[in-house]
View 1 (cartoon, rainbow, N blue to C red):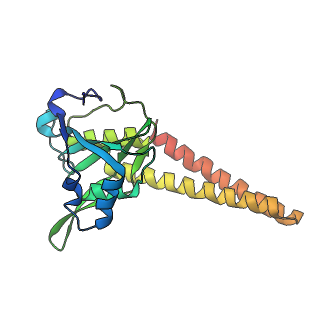
View 2 (view 1 turned 180 degrees about the vertical axis):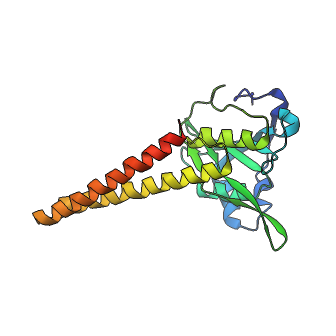
View 3 (view 1 turned 30 degrees about the vertical axis):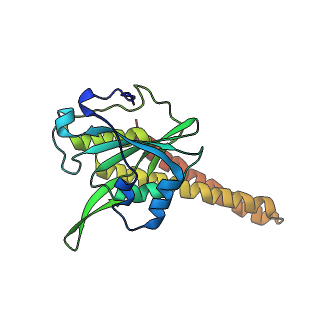
Length: 226
């Protein structure tokens, strides 16, 4: 496979990865079934590291591996990717080809020590759907692995954060917005079903108040992403 993202040639690995490289690390039989059922092939495309990028090592990020996953069908299960990612002792980006489409998936990851044992915890995945793979799909920016990682995460998530803390704050704002939007949809259904005019007015007042909250949260989120 070519250098499809036009990353520095020093980062190119382009090596086929057997499926058991993933499920062999786990006793979860469901993961093996998932890989066998849905994956056609996996290619380790890039290794982003201080030595391959000529940047400083990070405090939290030391290596980012990019995998190209070709699926057998025109749809796929996303949840098992989190299990796969958690098995890898490094940060990861998945390029997922399914049918005629391609998605980018990246899980925010943290290394933890549980009873003295190193564990990796995956956050909620950032999924960028139906992308066009070319030299402008992802850009590597920064002089340290932490900065490179944050930059890639922001490009996939659509957020703009220079630190892990800022990213978490913006994710929290996004969750609040999504929650309020769901509340509004629920209230609007109640308004349509409600026969009493006074009750309709009360529900409309609640909707207006929630929309004010959306305006405020959207401003905060957009302010961070200018």
